[in-house]
Every structure is written in structure tokens, then in C-alpha cells.
Image 1 (tube, rainbow, N blue to C red):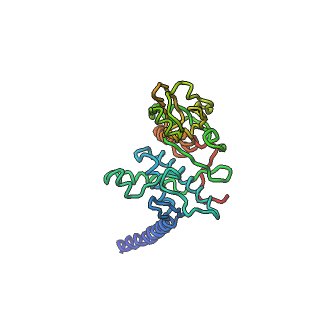
Image 2 (cartoon, rainbow, N blue to C red; image 1 turned 120 degrees about the horizontal axis):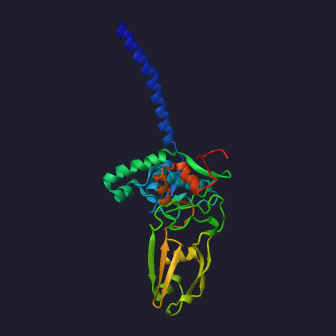
Image 3 (tube, rainbow, N blue to C red; image 1 turned 45 degrees about the vertical axis):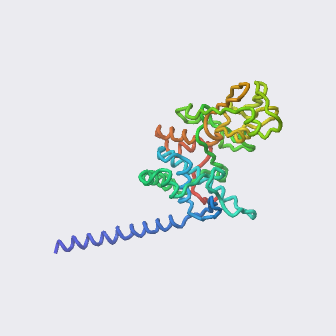
Length: 313
């Protein structure tokens, strides 16, 4: 009789504990599948709708090395989610039919097929799990300032200098995009030199006429940002913003130096990207120092708050 009572008690515990747990788990999974949808313009021209959290997995895969520290990957997931949330909030009557594409014009994105091609089958399962963890453990988290989603800009490496203020790279200031330390341990990670003959320079800059030999007077810095990157420059008689020159000449950054030779101009660039917001390599180095995602984000976006996607403003 005693044995029967033990079995009865065990059965009751299963009913009380296991069944409610199963229901809660089912409800949680149902919520996860019922996600915010985002419209992606594919390279083929097709617009595809997918769940926000699934989209973010592909963004983190494309935008940050998968072997980075998990806290850095989490910071990337939050920044990417914030960027996407802001894009969703900007829909209006002149809607272009999609929210993001798959390039750096919005945020780079990889499909599962592209991830397999990039990493190989073995690493695909290993890396995908890490990225899924970064996305799921920051689920719905976005960065907010003054009641609005922020412009959560990020770049690969600030190089040898601190990050830039947004107004010194683009037109308008954001109080949370300031000069802060890059967080990077290896300040010489990205150094690359480019050599241009007079003919190549004329062609890239769209200058008419016969190319002539270059001398030191043909290139001069007109202004610099607060931290010392080139802001504007005169080259071959024309004034360029450094961001414009970077695009025309295919330079990785605006932290540049040069050597003038009669038959060529050699430009050396330090760092990789526009240098505004979060340095991805810096985020990884901070994570190696045991900084958590909240601390990493607070460093690069000072004055912002972490809140849930779709919060009541």
C-alpha cells in the first residue's frame, strides 16, 4: 500500500510540475515565432519578409567575425537590432517597398546557404550556434536616447585614434556619438598603402585634361577632426571632404598620410571604416577584458539606455 502511495505522489508531481512547464515552453516558442517582421530586398530584386530575430542572425554573421567573444557578438546584435528598428519606424507614404537590403548600404546580411559557403559545414554548426546565442540572449533589446531609437552606427576598427563625433563625419550631431577611446589593443591592426599614378588619380577623380607630374603642393590638408583624422583636403586644385575622397579613391578610412613622388602619390590609411560609434574590434577586446554587453554598449554609445523593442514612448 505504501508503494502505491509513493507512485501516486510521484504522478501528482508530474502533473503539477511537468505539464505546466510544457505549456509555458510551448507558449514561449509560440511567442518567438510570432515576431516583428522585416522586409529584405534580396540581390535578385525580390523582397522577402522574415522575423526580426532571424534577420539579425544573418546580420551578425555578415558584419562581425563569428569567432569573436560572445559579449562582443551580443553588442553587435543589439546595435543591428536598433538600426533595423529605426528603419522600421521610418516607414511613411513614400515607402520604397522594403526596410533593408543585404549590403552595407543598410546592413550586410547572409542567408544560411551563404553562411555554409563562408564557413564550411563543420564551422557552420559551431558558429551559427554562437550567433544564435548572441541574438537570443539579447532578444528584443535596443538602444534608446531621448525617447527614440538611436543611430547605432558601428565600424570595423578605429585604428590608432579614438572614435569620431557624428557631426565631424556627417552633417548632424548625435549626443551619444562622441569621441571615446577605441577600446582596441592593437592600434596597428589595419594599415594599408595605396599607390596612384597621375593618370589613375585623374581618372578616379574625374579630372579632365592631360595628367601632369604630382608635387607636394598638389595635396594639402585643409582641416582635421578633433582627434586628428583628415576632414577636408585640397587635391589637384579641388577641395574634397575626406569622406568623399575616401569613396573616390577606395580608401578604408580618413586617417591618412601620404608621400608625394613625381610619378605617383602613395597614401597610407590607418583603421577600417568611418570610425563613428562602436569599433567592432574594440568591442571584442573589451569583451576579452570581461566587459559585459551592457558595459560595451555604454562605452560606445554614452547616455543611451537598453530597452525592449516596441517599448511605449
